[in-house]
Length: 465
Image 1 (tube, rainbow, N blue to C red):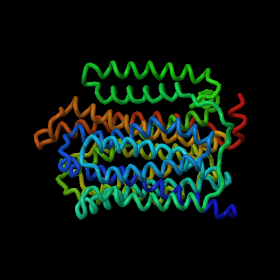
Image 2: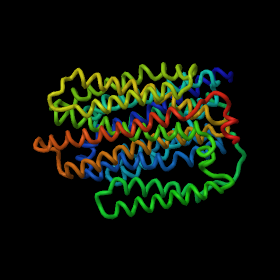
Image 3: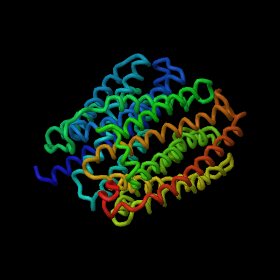
Image 4: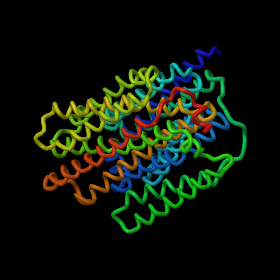
């Protein structure tokens, strides 16, 4: 098969996977109330349908990225799509809430295999001068999945029930498996076979689980204990990985490669400061403004539409100038948007809300693909898989911490009861507080993004000192 046909096949399966995983997350979130009623699940149990997926994805991204670098990226990608397809089938036929949570954990593990290899395969088959463009297209498909998830998911759930969300996943997964098996003959394995750092993987997963679980439960006495245990496990993990001959996470990439380290930290900060905005805006529009869910969704869809349109352009821009410039400008736009959120109230007209959402869309588009291009361009070919997995992990961790921090503020400033008209003033105060703190965090992100250095000039230099 010609090189161009291989590139096309890799692009097709990568774009499909990039669309499918966020589509499933956003569509399932829309269906959570229906799932809860059908399976008799309370609010805490329903939250674990999403949390279990995100947590397993974050835990397994780095280990599977390491395995993909050693044993083959196409092979791990194929297994990941297979697991997603099987877990979708199981999710569609189960009749128990606990079993659904378990299948979502399996889905998260499969998604980690796909996240950790899809971008790495794209980077492997496309030359550096085209990397920003194809990564920009890839990011735009991710945003397209996020955009269409609530719309299509709501329609399918209303017309055919929540199980249809998982049924439609199955033929798409089978089609991707067929393309990978028949159209992609090349394999990408940059490293020799060797022992796998099992203890490192175990400590890594334990530290993330303990920190995230503890962070979301800081209002309880045991929350601090869980966080302390997670931080201790993380410290031991870093110490062991620094000494390991074949670590699952090369600490030297963070210590000796400033572009790699700062780009990943910028991603963590960006998603920590922004992911909960969609959650807050959904509550604001439906509670404070009194909009119906369809109208609120119509307003919020403006942001991902802008992201879909601008992401390829931002990726192409990063092919010609240093990625830190558009990425930092994007975080600057996000900072301004967060500041504007601190002024929203019940009387705010629709036009300023739409303009704020468009500003967020511009910011996300300018940041995401150039920042990803900087991460992938800062390492040599042997570390493409681990670099892809690392930036994916930063995104997932940022998303979880953003929601965890927001839920912590809600429990402190509003309480754990329902949001009623009597507590709308407290909700607005909480939203303003969260937005202001997120804006401050985003300013730090701009600084980190600016000081990362230049990608062009040789990866070898950054990794050899």
